Each structure stands twice: as C-alpha cells, then as structure tokens.
Image 1 (tube, rainbow, N blue to C red):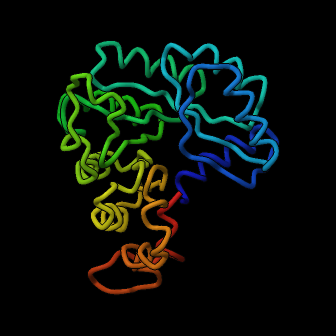
Image 2 (image 1 turned 180 degrees about the horizontal axis):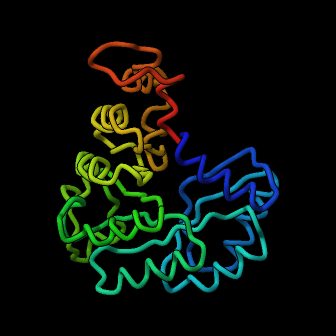
Length: 237
C-alpha cells in the first residue's frame, strides 16, 4: 500500500494528525447527517475515510471537510460518459479532492479509448482512480437499464494500469468473482491495489485460507515473479 498510503499520509501530516484506521470506500448519500455520523465514528477510532462524492454534493462536502480536517479524503464520483466530466474533474481537483471514483456502470468497457481523456486528466493532477470491478447490483430489476458487468470486468483495468504507471489505481471488490485475475494483476502492476468492500468477506468468511491462495507470492523470488515484497497482502486496502 506504499503509493496509496504515501499520498494519504502526506494529507494527514499536513493536517498535523496521525491515524489508526483508513476506510478506502465510503459513498456519500448527500445528507449532512450522514457526514456527522461518519465523522463521529472516525473520531472514535482515530480514522480517515475516502469519501466518494457526486458533483452535485461538491460544495457541501468541501465545506464539511474544511471544518473537520484530516477525517475525509475526497474522491470525485464521476461518470466517464458525462459530457461535462472533464470540467467536473477540474472542479474536484480545485477543491482539494485526491481521487476519482467509484467509476461504475459505464456505457463502454473501462479501457475504451474514448475514456482516455478522463485518465489523462487524472494523471495530470496526480489523482487516484477507484474502479468498481465485477458483479454490479440491481436494486430495481423492474426498471430497464443499460448496464453490463462485461464492461466492468477486472481484467479491463490491467491496460489502464500499464498505460498510466503514475496513477495509483484501486479496484473495488477484488473483481468479485474474478479474484484470481485481480490478484495476479496486482502482483505485476505496482500501481494497482484492491479493496474488499461488498459481499466477498461474507462469501469467504468460512474459508480464511482462500485469500492466501490468490495472494500467494510473499517472499517468493523467481524469474517469473516481480521482486518479492514484505507481503503480498500489501495489495489489499
């Protein structure tokens, strides 16, 4: 987690604080009461959260972050398909947001060339990218929608990680259910990490050795493996 937490610790150090807990995936629902409850919980555990914020809530959250320094790291919850997306990224960066995401429900696959201006802008600003990977929920099955998990496959962010080696990328949900692909991609891409939010921990709670089977390369040295790290589990945030 060197890249992610290197950026995070710089932010926290600038605020004159230390932290014991980091939640790297929290969706803001637009309500101030949600922010109050979140920050109260973070203060209880001396924590910090990556808060995913829609453009319409930018001002509300920017003001709130200023009043609670060190507790919230802003991520701009943008859609690459929005015709105003580049302007939105500029606004999030100006407000001090450190990343973009959770990028999800796209009309095209993640690595479609039409999305490169979005990734170029993130690289320009040094912003992290958080992608939804794998299965996506369907809370209103009676409503028609243009969504496909095939556009959100975890393997699609391998190309992005290679094209943009300076961008720290987080894949949400460890590619559920393509866990093996996610782990192997993280093994070879030093700028790629994964979170375990969602249903994975529920599914795997009776199989604690599962994660060791996909994050297998701790202290392994061979011509077919990148230089060994302290632990393969550095790739999970």
